[in-house]
Amino acid sequence: MVPRMGELRTPRLGGSPGELEIRSDTCRILEETIPLIKDKLMEMYHICAKADKLEAFVKMVAHCVSFVEDQT
View (tube, rainbow, N blue to C red):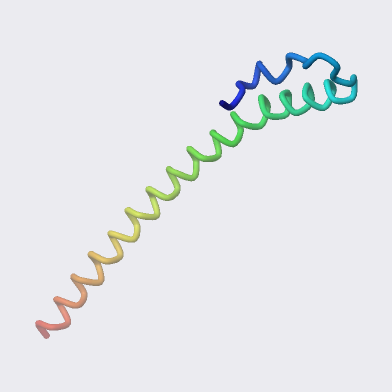
């Protein structure tokens, strides 16, 4: 079972102060960066969708050019 981010903050008995500080820092960093990564991922999806549409358009134009060349 994978612990949730909030669960990482709860100290184990006998944990050293340094260990607790590392856990707290790790949790804070994850809470800050995961939303940023998700935003970038959504941007990449939009960019990839545009690239796919452009690729389909280029293929269509190539087909049309090929058709016109065959008729001349």
